[in-house]
Length: 229
Ligand code: DX5
Ligand code: ZN
Image 1 (cartoon, rainbow, N blue to C red):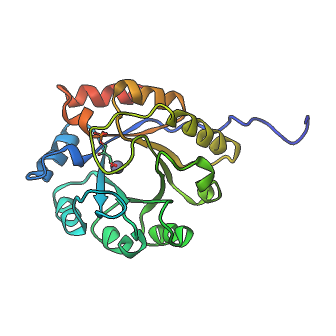
Image 2: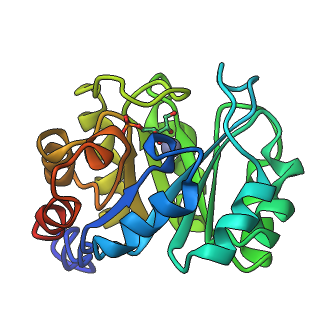
């Protein structure tokens, strides 16, 4: 085709964002862990919410998020690992979440829930487990602020990164460019400076890191390394 098309690769890539996961922080002193993130010059924090059904683990709920909000001005990137996320959107929005992401796998009205998140004044995100193909979210891409590709099976921190997810990132990034879409492409699970930079090359721009961030000798240097990608 000679006419009517300029470039498929015109979209300006987002600058990288690090979102440390409080799951790997000190659960007796979550506010102190959030402070450590802010003091490292980072603006996002990732909050992992688990219901014991969608994933075989439990974490914390809106009451804890409300308490954290009183102690932190970080951007709250709230990852709902829930069978029935639509029942809790409002509670997490009121608690002070800035972005709420929901999984595609359980059956509920994904489109309506994504719209509801925005109507409540938050950014929205859709999440795919490792076994879920990119095609499962393709129709929703024009309606989301963020796509989260799980690079481990969700439920626990400290698992090994799955390199097979790089291809899914490449596909989603290509669809983003082709559609001139602007959603962020986030990765979560087993991310460190090595696996994260592979994800960056595959199109990711938003990096959740639990274990690797909280075990870093110099959190500020860790954050600066990601900012330079
Ligand atoms: C896993 C959570 C992750 C977790 C990542 O279910 O969604 O956010 O905190 O932890 P690491 O970085 O240790 O793999
Ligand atoms: Zn997460």
